[in-house]
Image (cartoon, rainbow, N blue to C red; front, side, top):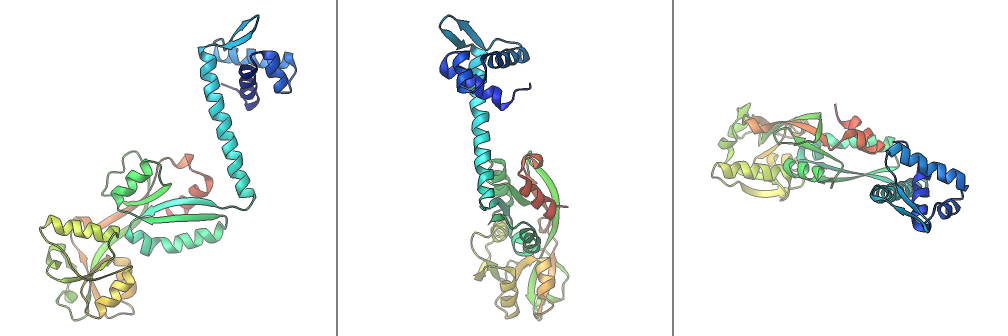
Length: 293
């Protein structure tokens, strides 16, 4: 079907004026040219679009349907021009990005910093959520891109590999667990914890795992990031479950050790997810190509 915007505007003008002559005048077009365009649309579709009479024209059922779609297309084109005009006036494009705790604190900052430096007209609206929530929000069109664990059902979303997130327990150097390289989550439950703030996706996940074992984590203090957990662990405030990437970095400057959690859920493959890569704006596709493998 090869209609152009001029065809669609002409057809709406014909309906609004009630005649091909009136539509041609409103479209600043010769009558012969307007008539040829209308006939061309009918031939292309294989159905009549107008009922012609002495008092003008009336749309057929197919004509009403075409009119509805024409209004939608022309409105979307107007919206597009307005948005592009905003960019021309220096306003910024925005990407809505959702991620879990490990991605937010460890993996994304360097990638996002490099991306923003390369794309000065783009801003990123970044929020932390649990993986199941991210899938639901992306599916519903409430965000553009998400980073989730592969343990959740991502439905019909497209995915790309992002990182491996191994969870470990960070402990003070003289703690009984300091000599171990691996430990199960169940063996930690009698210890006081240094945790992340309420609402943290990781901490909510750990609380859920404890509840499945009939336990409740004993938090001595909650903080905002893995680095703060490690500093408090060094001071014997408690133990903390964090990303192995954070533990490796912090153990170079702090008196802490760490052991990998052996539970299957503690080793997570993180995935970038989206509804349809090819339908995303160009700047969003560039971000996904930057952070995804």
